[in-house]
Length: 392
Image (tube, rainbow, N blue to C red; front, side, top):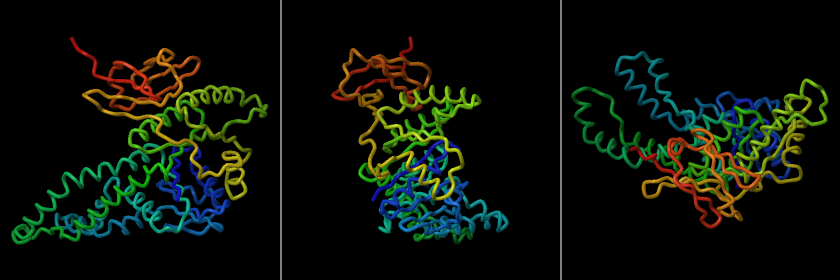
């Protein structure tokens, strides 16, 4: 089983990259399903055919699915929604308004996560490819298990016990609809499902995230931020796909400036995401729609490679808290400490220069407000220690 997640800023082409990858996997004989978790689906457009709320056959060995939030919420959250609607109706809200208010923030992401677990557990597929929502929504999606686990361990048992004690009194005195034990069991299963999803997507033997970007300033910066937080939450990124590069043989003067911009930011991509491999895709002469164009894109990205291979193994960054300080750990094998230079270029950016090479690292918020105290070599890792600035 292999799980590949493709994410990036909206409009960079992650859907076509996901579709092209899925088609290549199916052509190689893998039973492959490609799933869109983006609320504004375009996966069906890439294949130029209709896709359903459940896996829809596309070609031999290939299925596609555009997750229908309402369908998935009824499937996984229906009992909870009906109880919430009953409570809101009891408070005097009209039926349709009460039903609308039961769609809580984050429920669509939750439904998407549970579908990934379900597809994995069926055993029907060798490869699951996730065409994720734009970066910000994807990061929210991937942090949900952390929140769910905390709620399950710290708050949920107290609420369940309190309701069990107060249920008879509140029903008798206020005629208030109270949740029964089955409802709590449903919520508990949902939260456990999130925890299982986290274990699945952080399994280094199964899952990888791949960042799709265009070599442009704002796009690269957002991809850097996503890369930082994916590392922080334990999700392994194994490749970056730089999409829509203008071919050098395009001679039209209109594109001269754009080629210069792309060359400059392609260098930044190398600096920001090392040691990950950068897979490049040209800007094609026509839109990437339909099986033939998707196969052309897959050929440009992977060449003769199998897309299910691990392009990079291991963590590219770690953030640890130790003795009241924070440590940023970066793998830098075969480098001497005296060859390393640290430069703080802005509040949330750290440049690590090694001879003629440099790494451009966007710091997570927890480190961006701290000062660099020291740096040391620990085996093949560069360990940078951060602490609060001392005040007089």
